[in-house]
Image (tube, rainbow over all chains, first blue to last red; front, side, top):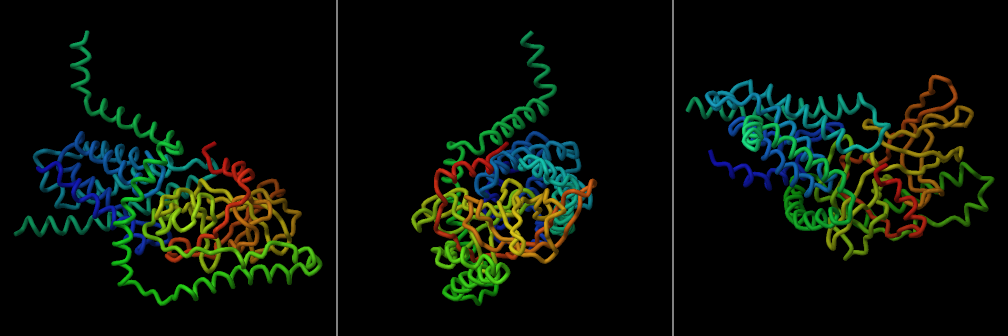
Length: 160
Length: 277
């Protein structure tokens, strides 16, 4: 596996995330494509690799998006750590080319959005239900829908 | 002893790395508002925003944009003026004092375009395509042709970061136009809320909300939204008002920076509201 490949993907991916993805937001809910790729590579490379990748992605995401520095670093590191438990050296290909990937992606996206919502918020009067539902659950669902594309692509590649 | 630590470190290396990365992240969060961190972010944004702008220009080919810049400026000015006129009509008794108020329609408007958006439920941020070279400074209010959008938080030479009103870390002093009731507007992750308005005050659903004279972040009379919901607390003493913003924050792409910063001294005081508690 080429460990530097996802870093090359990062800049175009971030551009899409910050410029194109807002065009498809639904009531302020957007999919997280950066996380999608981080999860994919965490399942290919293992827990430690995933964590470091999540940390790097998060760092640059915070830096370039104008958000609070550290919020995305924290959320993506924790999400990638959890995803590391689903890593299986012997099932790398099937893990990314089956519906298992979508379940893992949903869990990661939920954790990422939840941690991000809490880490990036300094207002104690924020509604917990809003953070949980609109801040975490719905973006996780939206991100998972985009994960279908990767699964379909890998399934097709597997057949060929 | 060292060997024991080495063995433990190797055995639990995932946890060791996790702890290190989490600690670094938490330190970064705590230092996020420090000048050094802001400098780093400004440098990164200045470089990345160039790419964002190119991408945005390319993407905008596929999105309908029939607005002409001059018309948009005119529209924004009319919107501000209309709001002022509505207030004058509603408060006929105070007409004379209203004449002495600052004319918001003559405020300098700097047209800007959004080049990237960070849309989350806690941190609404835009990066716009003009910066200090165009006369934009930190603390300037940002509007669109409908109403208030946010506040300039960071500025580089060619780009600026705008914190939108749908950001949990921004609180705004507002006035309910019809009854002149003042309150503080903040984002609770779902809606814009004005909390703790006594139930004895005359507030109705549909009332217009605008920036207050008390605000040193924003000039007065900028339209913010209308009251869409009124909830009373358990004791029945206070209202919590939900405000529907005039500006569609997530859909907006063409904005105006109002080229003024309030009195620096007052501004410094109120800017403290933007900092972490």
